[in-house]
Length: 206
Image (cartoon, rainbow, N blue to C red):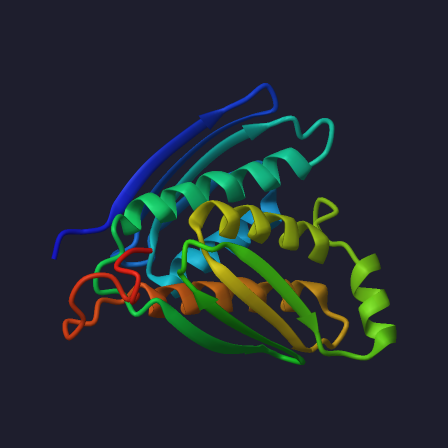
């Protein structure tokens, strides 16, 4: 089977980003975003999804990390969509549950071309409030992760639900579980089922 891959570049007054993605890879990565924690999460994403991924980004980090973080999500999403091409034969749906010590995350995806992100925080109200206040690294937060993934799914054409089922107050572990679950869910959803002919939709297209 031909390797599904894409290269996308995007330059604005705020950021300059290049992404090379091979969906049918081995989990190799070379990532330089200027945001160390995001680099770590994207390396995990590549490793656990078996995606070969190269990202080079320059952004206005002297202002803050927001533009760079969000714009990388945009470009990665566009690369993912381009690499999938016509989506013929893919599984389309997937559900993955990932623990990380006291944190537990479930991600469900539908590569539907009807993008949306839904986050369900199934934890105590006090933990929800704490989750909104915590930050790590270069002030990377759960909100920053949400902004990154929102940009990704909107540009990749994915309907995604993220359920935070357990949170032990370790934000690093929670976000890590999210990125690992994201990788595994996407890897499963893009697998080719040889029994399927054409795109997995009664509409005849996705």
